[in-house]
Amino acid sequence: MPIHLIRTALLVALVAALLPITLNAAQKDKLNVLFIAADDMNCDLGVYGNQQVKTPNLERLARMGVRFDNAYCQQPLCGPSRASLMTGLRPDTLDMHTLAHELRKKNPDVVTLGQLFRNNGYFTARAGKIYHYGNPSQIGTDANDDPATWDERYNPAGIDKKQEDKIVRYSKGGLGISMAWWDPESKDEEHTDGMVASKIVELIEKHKDEPFFLAAGFFNPHCPYVAPKKYFDLYPLDSITMPDLDQAKADLADVPKMAIQRDIKGWPYYFDGVSVEEARKCKQAYYACNSFVDAQIGRLLDALEKNDLMDNTVIVFWSDHGYFLGEKGLWYKRKAFERSARMPMIIAGPGVAPEASTKKPVELLDLYPTLADLCGLTPPGNLEGKSLRPLLVEPTTAPWDKPAVTQVWHNKNAWGYSIRTERWRYTEWLEGQAGHELYDHDNDPDEVHNLAGMPDHADTVAKLSESLKSYVKLKPQKRKQ
Image (cartoon, one colour):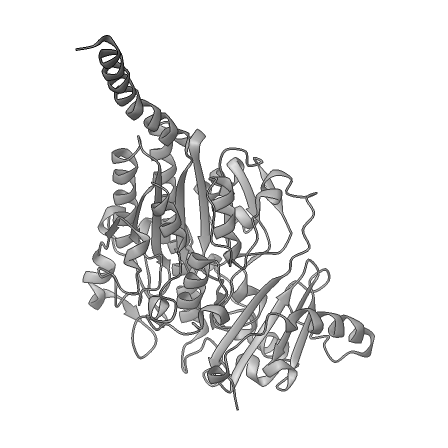
């Protein structure tokens, strides 16, 4: 063989030998993502200052990164909130406002967050609930999941699903919206959320040598409130307090009827006949579920540490919206008040300021552009959120003037939009035709005093109303004609 052909062959062989090494090094330079979701979790957490509710692992995560004190969902309902987060698009843009399984039906070409990572060479998988699931009816199934988002999907089902007959119920109807609880003497791994954590730990260990996007979707603390008894024991029932109902009713006196139209028929606590003591028991159970989820998060953090992945993994914790536990005599979500729209959100990872927090208003749909930015990926050009990187680097001083907008949609005759700035929450129902609300969070964090009709706040109302207009893009078929 001529010498030049021998040299060429040797060069080709050398390149072929080095190529996997080069690609492997490039792969290892990519940041992993651990994406952790809770269902219906509000900010009644130790990590957010409620020292009654024990969340040591969320506090551990917060010490590693930035806690967002004013993070808001796009719609306080699981389906549209999660679809919005996973696409970076608002519910109006997606035309999704209910629990229907219609993401791809209405948006066939959308590139989801996990799909972006999958398209860029990441292993993507989820265990549990990331898109909407009927909880507990669809536990153990793919429910409203999006197959294009993942390489692998896991749907465990524990005793909370398989032994539903043991759940104590205070309300009629299905368990998906109920006042119901159960505190079995059980191991964490016997429950669906324990199984979710176990699967993600397994996937971390299996895929630690390649870039991954792993999503742990916990079903708690969504009702029914089921967790091992040891978590209930953290909250003696006599330590659980409920708001005075006379004061709670007074808090609603200046609220537009549409703002609470789903809640007032069975007020308080949504269902007729639920007593204060029964509500107290459910609140105890809700807190127990929060601590149960916190323990599973601890298992995930331990797995990252065990596998030396902390230094190259972005960790995101979020809930899909907030939740009422008797404040104003209300229960559940689907309201434009702060307790329904606000939820916990924490981000940690390389380059993220440790032990920091920010009060800037941010939105769940900001997570998509943020993760793309942190991981060096090019996202779709139509995203409606904004990368949070500036706040992750300089949480208190970075320029940030974007408000947070949350909408509520019950039917074409009942809907509204709420805008949250650092100081104000302003809400319009049917673009003001069915009433409006203004709350000063500097002086009234519980939103007791509606200032919208006060002459001395007319300029603030006018300014916020004008700011809200560009976000109202509800399609004609979803509006009263």
